[in-house]
Structures are given as C-alpha cells and as structure tokens.
Length: 196
Image (cartoon, rainbow, N blue to C red; front, side):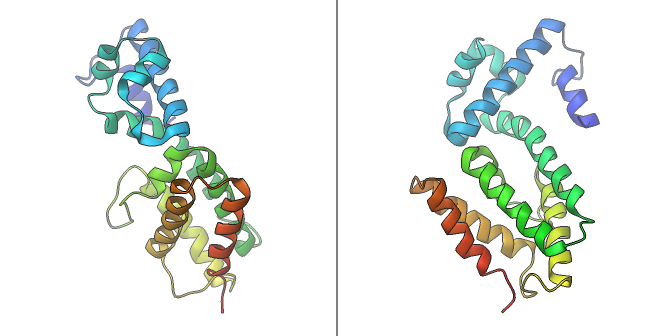
C-alpha cells in the first residue's frame, strides 16, 4: 500500500482521522466496488455498490462523492499490482518473452475484470498522466526492451500499444466474446506487434 493509499484509508476528505467503524465501512465499500466494477465495469450504480457493501447510499457518498472517485480508489490496488508485476519482468533475461507474457496476463485479467480494461483503455498517456501512469511507464519499459531485443517492431510507441489494447478490449467486451474468442483476437493483434 502506498503512502497516499494508507493516508486515504485512514482519513476523511478533510484530513481528519476516520473512526474505526467509518474506516471499516470505507473498506467494505471499496471491496464491494472492486467486485462490482470487475464484473460489470464502471456502469454499475453507486446504490448497487452500497447494497453489496451492506451500507446505506449516504455512507458511499460520504467517502466517495462521485462514482469516478470510487472507481479511481478501487483501481489503485489493482493497478499497483500490475505495476509490480511489470516491474518484476523489467530485468528478464528474455525481454521479448517477458513483454508478450505480460500482455497475455493483461488480456486474461481484463477479460474477467472489466474495470482493468476500462482503466487501461482510458485517455491517459505518459504525457497525459492519471491513475495508470505508473502502469504505462512500466509497460513502456517492457516494450522498449522487447524492441531493443528485436522481438517487437520498432515503429510503435506506448501510446500506439495502448490504442491497440484498447481496441481489442473494446471489441471483445462489446461483442461478449468468450475466452477462446478473446485469445484468438489478441493473438492476431500481438502477431502484428512482431517485427516484419
């Protein structure tokens, strides 16, 4: 847990320490939100998240004034885990394999967790930072190492890669593709990343 997350988990928006019951309610809301966003994406209503958390809607709104604020908080932990995974692969002996293995993990994760697909498919970039900027930077390292090793075409950058991934996530989620269809779709896309 980062210092920012730890502070957010123990303080209110005013900077005051949360009471133990308020902290527990916040944690329940976050857990319910992660589950709901993973299954249904950001379209799930806040009242439904409150119901799943076993709290009133007012409790959700006290901690998270907007759905976007709740989505952002729910994504931090998942994104940090994805960053840690990418960072662990940054010194892999086979940069090409590390890059494509990581993309495979992203496809599997985003296939069952729509919130991750929506976060990765957002409008953030290294020049336009947001909650996934560290993730983009970590993937960029994997991409550049794979390019230097000759495993990936050199005429793309991280923004191109994110557009490709976003297109794949959009195509497979909006058409209700099953796991095998998702695998085939991304296999074709990833073949296009390999050097000519």
